[in-house]
Image (cartoon, rainbow, N blue to C red; front, side, top):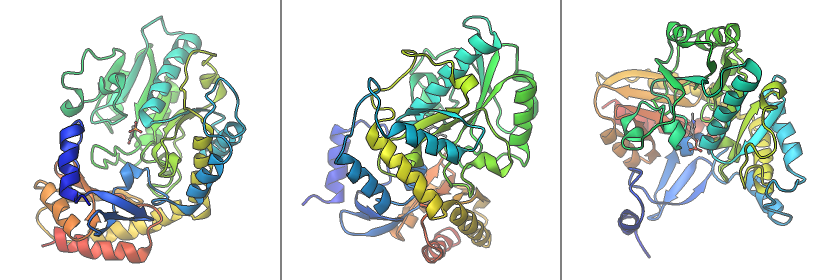
Length: 399
Ligand SMILES: *Cc1c(COP(=O)(O)O)cnc(C)c1O
């Protein structure tokens, strides 16, 4: 039997060092809990960056996957399959009546790439932008994925160093700054791509009304608004989608993570026909995108969110969680912020020693950008389990 240390050493020899994981080797999981190879139990407060909103190995989603495995797994889009149409209809119903067309992909980055291609083509064919002049506005500190095009407009040196040359056509402005958006728009601007809350940047929540004003500015200038809800979507912030807190409906949404119910990479772009209609046969695709297993899992993942009222649970428990955290009095705390079960404690000192202590207490949380600790447990978490976690967090952060 190998122990945690041996697994980590072997991984370090044979696996590329493109992550700096917390030193825990997980072997088993259920609901909000995971166990390491030594049998120690932890509360998962990262939820695979919100890909496990429904909890680990949710029985209904696992069953949907197993049942589909008795029928057909993969067809490619060279043929139709009997799962995709109903799944996309279901997804669009969840997204709201403004969204009438969807394009299935696998990873979040692919969904973002799809959205980029779509709004560029829309710019040339519908808006009338001159060939190869399309501009997309994005924000500083954004996180939209890891492909060469996407990292080209990242402002994080870890993500960009020595990966150039970068794809042109992107303009970077400060987040939460309406004047900067207005000033950046030109006749060639086709879209503004933005996260409703910046997750990887450390759960950065824009001012009240920002999303609504952004919507107005985009509408006024015939610029498409893309919300990347890959991490904020599917209940994380206490609503099905984060933009619903402000009733600011985008033209395009990129979705992923929890759409795969914690089992498979399942992503999608949703929009409406006058925009998504720019795709023609051969212009875009993915071998696995919309494969029957993904559709079965996506359907079940959506059902679980609704049936188990996970948005409501996130709203209720999130409010309680933040209120409790705000009772911690310690000079090392700079700010406590969050929406739903998307919460961060920002410190005046480096966060890693505290995440390390939290691990010892049985809580898996990860620091973002050195000074903040993000808490994003699965949305199936009970109040009792959350109270247990709060006691531990208070002990570690408050003393
Ligand atoms: C995780 C994430 C992505 C990328 O998703 P992958 O599945 O890792 O490619 C894109 N945008 C946001 C906001 C994310 O949180």
